[in-house]
Image (cartoon, rainbow, N blue to C red; front, side, top):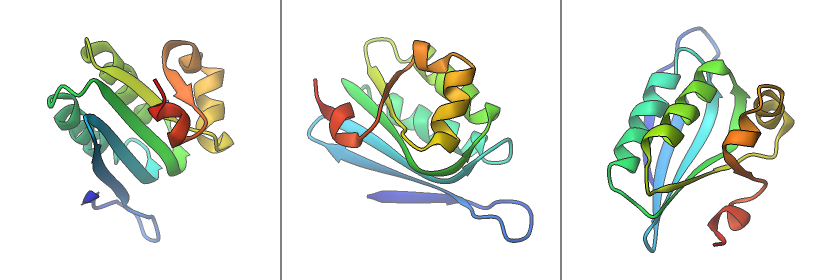
Length: 122
């Protein structure tokens, strides 16, 4: 996995880690750490670069995310809007990530799956 890190602000805060795996023709973007206002730009850049490769399927794996704020949700909405023919799936099962998406109705807009294996199934 090619991994990119973004420095985070504040003492004791984990940095956001983003890695990209190429599986056959699918891309899996693995995200770990906190997705908040400080780190959302880094996540958006990584997702934009992945989407520009025009994979038939782009999976955003949020299983390593400890905090998922509204800035992260905006990034996912923008990704879904600009992907065109690329199918976007999000992996999330932890309530710290899934619950905010449910409350805002984002799970009705995005294709959210509980596991990576589910996301990779056609």
